[in-house]
Image 1 (spheres, helix red, strand yellow):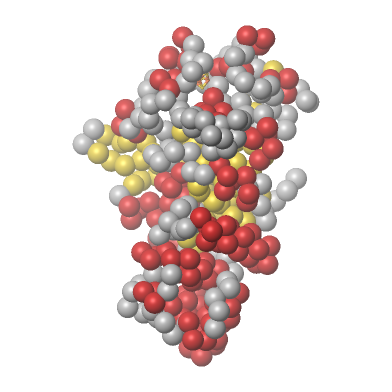
Image 2 (cartoon, rainbow, N blue to C red; image 1 turned 60 degrees about the vertical axis):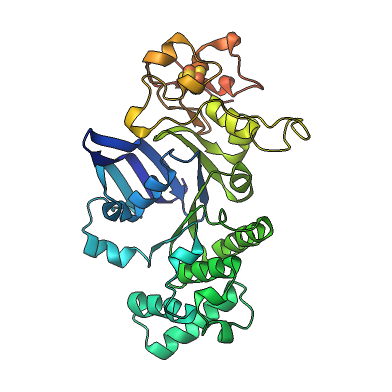
Length: 352
Ligand code: SF4
């Protein structure tokens, strides 16, 4: 069995409000194998970024609390670590890049200094060696004339260049896991493709694993090994790229795929949208939390939460439609044959 670098187990993270704890992730369980990329997709407010911040334990600084669950990194539970212990892991073994490169960089230090500082702190390198490696990292991320660029400030660079600097900073200490939260969203389309290619190339070179957060299914298709779909704080589907794109089981995933421009005859026509909007986390619907927006909702969906059930191939989904047999209204052929399920129990799994 492939070795896992990250195992998230039943992670519940929330924010304390005057109405009590508002759960931003509800019993999320996810794995990342060494050297692989997991993409978490979903609309804004689905809990993707909170999951990433919980792994980094940065949620503590964002006013959130991890109420329950474990985050095992190479078998060590990060949830039970103190913040001073996390300082040795964060920025060193696990690093993170954010959506907006300009806000991730300090405007009053040169970019070379910012990368070198990370190397001095985490690798204990002397000043000259840290600077040499910082320039080398800028070269690796494709910055032209890195010796000159290292002495420049963030405002002297384009958005794409700044994101390359942020990637250089994140990879300088050779992390085992890179978390990228919407790393291309703030960039022009042409630059987005370059940054995705760069991340893919560096992932191979540095032999890292990656957790990529995106709302863009096209990005997920390009870089992921597995895709996890989140909705309103819950994991609703998870599988390989082929399973998610060719045999989606959850109607929310089907909706996300149908919303990609240019697919399924939408070219030139009206773009498909999922009706309604994601509920506030303080008021998540009963039963299946997607039921008010689901075109196939049944009575059972309004009252009973569907369990996440797994096929023989590891494709998981939480939808009562897996139980309805021949009357299944979902388009295409979800892999019903792979999973024999019984309401309220673990599935009896058969090979497809
Ligand atoms: S459980 Fe019901 S409401 Fe939820 S996605 Fe499936 S069919 Fe739709």
